[in-house]
Image 1 (cartoon, rainbow, N blue to C red):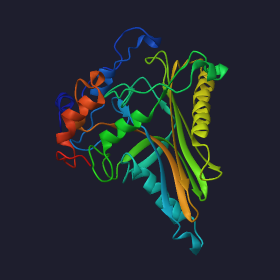
Image 2 (cartoon, rainbow, N blue to C red; image 1 turned 180 degrees about the vertical axis):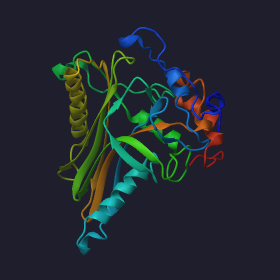
Image 3 (cartoon, rainbow, N blue to C red; image 1 turned 135 degrees about the horizontal axis):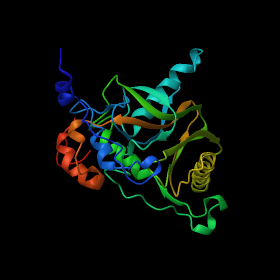
Length: 310
């Protein structure tokens, strides 16, 4: 039988104390470096779903997948819905071949957001001047989250080029919402992420929304997207009031697509909680840009790149 001391030495997950004494509620200290070091998975090439041990990474995926109506006339809408959902899983960052488990929408003090806390991708500010924001968003910094999605795509790869994807068949907890609709209609996926003042004592909040807008194909998309994004930010602030938690920074993102007649669309928001592949990890992750990480790790991708990009 394996000796306990020997087991600890050979354990898959590094023995990292996540809660050193320091400032913050409960005297915890939020350390991106400690969390990342405690969030390394057992596989060299594949990320795996978070299993409750150590820390975890959180990614972000927004996508609208579509499928031609093929099976619905036979009396069931189900197969075409599944095809549209499956397309949404693989259209952008590759989330294919996993058992997606829907969980609630918080990233606590033991988690870090990929592309925001680590492997940072510079986020653009919102286009709204302060005087155009609703009163409840006064003093709130709003930034667009599209580049967090980009960071997730560069980590997992795509259906065509896999980088460090989630292990096929693995069980992955995801903050998730999806909506399936038949065309003609506009369909959207949206997210708002509240970043609390005290990362050691409060959780980041994820608000997901998916829906149909109907309307004409030439609708005013910019105005609609802005309205949805502001609603997402306001909802984050409202939830914060319930918990006496302030979110001075809110990340928002919206993805929209037109679903034509005789098409089925699926709008998907998915934020997987995962342990990172060993070859994807680097001890300098909290201080690296996404571009620096990419330059160091691309030679280890599952599907190797040549000099010409995909």
